[in-house]
Length: 350
Image (cartoon, rainbow, N blue to C red; front, side):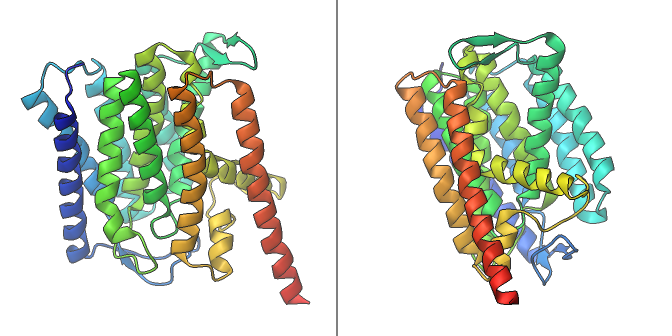
């Protein structure tokens, strides 16, 4: 792999500068996001921070193709970029026109299928003690659902200042480190681009007085790039034991998403309707600042990222045991925090 540390530094620096400048421009242009019934904000803020991610992705690939063309990137990368452009365009339209959830999900579903057909579906799962072979259709459905859930889920979690950007910066940075260790070049480039473009957004997005939102443009594209990169890691290394790396890195998000969705289905709610049922929304409703909420998720992310990187470095097989124990831990923490909020709410009403 001809990719020197200096190359990595300049690619990352370029992504950061492009993203930072575009976010600064969007703050000045003030393309506003009007709060709706799902929002926890009460005033309009500039949106379009996600445009920096799009520009940084394109810039990094042009830079690599121009100065280090011998880097062995995936031959399917142009097709992945087409999928990314479709997702980005969908995000832009949703930021402007607020597309209905069902229509947005249909488009995301077809993009997810296209991406999985290009990468190839998962063929087996790391079990408790050995691998579990999957029929083609089961692997296809599971792989599509992974991308679909990531895109929608990360979009759901983009509601508090800095929450999505800071957490996904950590997750994509961790994925980049793992890919670098294992020599997965395309995965590393995509992760590197994502984490530095999010870093360019963070100065304007993090904190209680956010100056710009990532918008659906940013959150949808972030979910797509991360989920696709996690699948590419398995393909590039030809190591199915790395299949759970992606889910582990964003487990605090996934546990909140799945428990919230299950609760809504149990109460007769819709997957596609707007709501304020996520844990971060409940915490902010209790007058906990956006910054503290984002830092809490970030702390949980640091734990699971450290665990995952440790397993990779020490060549510990990331089996279903590790995934299951991690899920139970994340879900339990989420349950007890939400339960404490509900008890406080009940006591205030008495």
